[in-house]
Length: 230
Image (cartoon, rainbow, N blue to C red; front, top):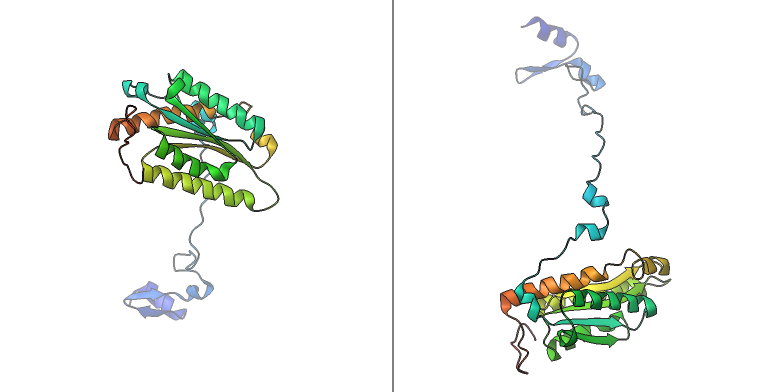
């Protein structure tokens, strides 16, 4: 028997499968001097800094949207809530201004007003049924209060709008802000963090995409092509 094996046996070890477990294992140490149960520790590497784009304002992440000849014949719907007062008024004005910059005005923009955010999905469905629109922008405001009303409404409305656009094949841009305070809402409506113009651009882009894939809705007849339940 090899000297090393004899030494380990003398210390109380037993041969197993041609190998030897040293008596030192009783102290949770392997024959190599490394803990048999605790993996070797290495210094945790510091996480890399976030990319510059992650820290950039949202507007910097959305450069000018693409346009095409298809966009010229689009018709976009705008649904806004009365609840929210001047802050929603500001969002609405910015959306309409964005559509005007994209060349959509007059009969190319269909507008509708509803009491609050909960009524928006139904209004969007009715607009899709009665009007010939290629995309819809919804504008409203929810501010968190002391009860669970805020969470219930925001989840219900967001889910309904997503389901509606997928079933109808009419893109819906969700411009209903969900803010934790009126101060936060002011920053995102009348302040520098407003994204209302980007919503208008998204509606034009997605309306153009829809038109290029399934065809624009006819403006000359009341008979509309059926897509989903529309």
